[in-house]
Image (cartoon, rainbow, N blue to C red; front, top):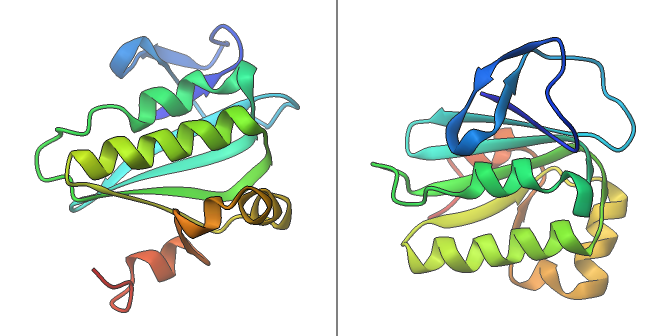
Length: 146
């Protein structure tokens, strides 16, 4: 599922997705846009972010992190490898989602943050409450831990 936030759907729309989010065909990145792709790998929901996460583009991520009662869901892994920018809105969404997930018995973790996001996490202390993996492959690997 592809979700895009920060504007109305484009020519590549394929219809409405869960929560009224738009599903789109992959399109080139545009500044200020956040593309959110959600997939499932067994008990893990993988949420991949591509672009810029801020107040204007946050709705796609909110939608992707909702639905914690999904059957068999044990973890949510947010892949930040292609996230170019994250402001306090994005950080707050991740932290709140981690709390909500914990209450639902689901772990929320992140992977592959770029240096600017690593710095944001370090400066705010988010790196002490979010489990951060170097990549999706490591997060899903046999040594990921419970």
